[in-house]
Every structure is written in structure tokens, then in C-alpha cells.
Length: 318
Image (cartoon, rainbow, N blue to C red; front, side, top):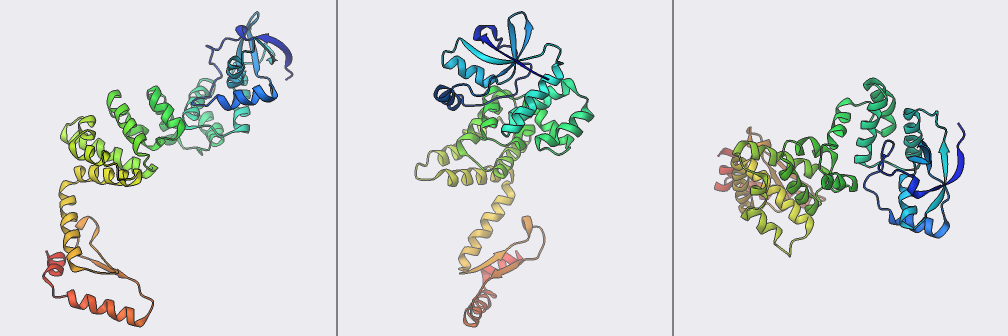
């Protein structure tokens, strides 16, 4: 398939036609600086849909950058008119995949457009692997749900402020709550696993207590943590995570706090006393390390000294 190269006027390009566009959440300025410095190296690919009326097949960002630079005309590669829409989309997709990794929203847009041209089986079997998703239908469903999010949240997802794993849970909240929760997570910059934990816990608290998310996130306990200027961002995130966890598991949190206080009174220097998971069961563990026989004996002596203490008996026997 050979393209014809010719000059086109920018006004002849219909930028509202996004039939083939998959780019989302990009910073145009670097491309503007590049074209401004060295010129247009790779012309965009256009397709004529009406006489002297074109739509962009490849190079949407290049056309936008040329507009930023004030170009009224530029050289474009014109795709033959008989090229099918499906094939034109694949030209754009393969060009993008050969040059960069798609962000999460771009992947969602790509899957949505692929479903227009291909069956579910073809999309799942032939194209998901190209997008780095294996052949996972559940993962494909997660990406489909991304397009239901509002613009600000999608932009945050494209920029990496939130992880795709929380998208299905976000959609269980109202649009107002989703935005508040997104802004909250973006501020804290939590890791992927911590985002999942916090959103899951908030979802359960919301349903169990019939309380709005913004009510939870603006209560006195949260505000106190967020207003502590001496606390770093990571520490704030950990404190918020622990606070939300306590709201979800109030009884367990009380037992854990009681255990911590009793353990601290034992003054187990260099020795870790580990309770059964969730305090369900009777088996405790003792962990410690040593480098010499003398150090080993000192820790054994410490353990022997606490064996008959009231605090230790309360911990182990209740």
C-alpha cells in the first residue's frame, strides 16, 4: 500500500473525527519543541473522506503540535481511499505500539475500538497479547470499565496517579464519591497495593455503616493526620491506611492495640513476639537472631525472665 505525499491545509483536517485516535493524557510541549527545532520528520497519515476534507489516521499529536506552532500547511501522507476503516485503524495501532507503551486509558480506548472491528474471540486472542494483557478476559473487562470514569480520574489513571486495579471498586461509588476518593488517593501517592487496600476497606465501611465516603474522609481523625505538617507523605499514607483499617475492623484493631501495649511492657529487646493471624488460634511465635553464643544466651535468659510475668501470661493465656 503506497501513500501519496502532498501539502494539505490544517483547516482541511477534521480534528473532531477521532475514528482512529487512541492517544490520551499526553504532554504536547516536548513534541512542539522538537518540531519547532528540526521540523516535521515523519508526516502524519491522513485519509480523504470528502474532497479536500481529511481525517487523521496516524499522527494526531503531530497535527496538534503543528497547529500550536502556527503551521497553516504541512506535508501529509494520504492513504488510498479504498483502504478499509479497520485496516486504517490497524496501521495506527501498530505504529503506536512500535514506538511507545500505551498508558492505561489508551489501552482501554484501543480495546474499545478493536471490538468495533473484530469479534470478542479475535480481540481476546489476537490483540490482548499485543497490549501486554495475555489473553485475560477478566483483565479486558477491567479495561472496558475504565471508559466509564470521569475525565479527571481517567487523566489521573493515564498519568499513573492511581492503579487500574481499583477501577472496578471505584465504579461502585457515586460519581461524586469517585472524584473525592480519586483526589484523596492522588494527594497521598499510595503504592498500588495500598490503594487497593484503602479503597476496598472504604467500600466495605460505606456499605456496612451506610455512610458517604466524603464523610469518612473529612472526619476529625483523617483531618488531623493530613494537617500534620511535620509528617512526611509516606508516613501520612501509612497513618491513613491504618486509620481506615481500624474503621473496618474496630474489634480487631482494639485487640491489636492491647497486644502492642502489653508486648511493649515486656521490653523484648531484639525479640519479636508474633500472635496468631487475626488473633484466631492459640499458637504464638518467637523470632530473634544472634551472632554469638553469648548473645544467644542473653536472649534466652530474657525469655526465661518473662515466662512467669503477668503481662506474658495475659498475652498468651488471655
